[in-house]
Image (cartoon, rainbow, N blue to C red; front, side, top):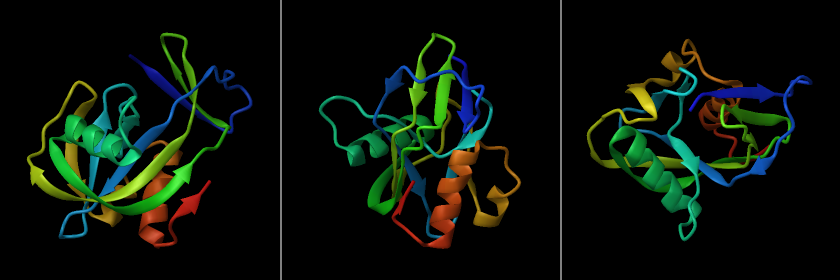
Length: 155
């Protein structure tokens, strides 16, 4: 399913759904961050997705990271909460989702990199390498918030 991101865009469609979600800044022992290139918009992003009934936000981040990257993680803390009502995702099925995401800090504990139906590439990057990657501004904000060490952030 295709997705278009709008952030503080007066031409954005009005949100018709609000879904709790989690993402993870997964940092390995060398200080590299795990990213995936998404199939729905072609941009680099943190692993993450919507929370399912019966799971915690931490469990959601662990599940989504494994599903999208093949890496099992342990949650270490929180990077921030991201709830900008001006940030919406428009899907080709008509859903326009307002962002409500908790970004957690995690470390890898097992697994090996693989893509999924949601990711066309998965790789580790140094913080400086992330600067040149195409990504939506909300993902870049999460990475920059982690890099600055001023967490947890509420935005």
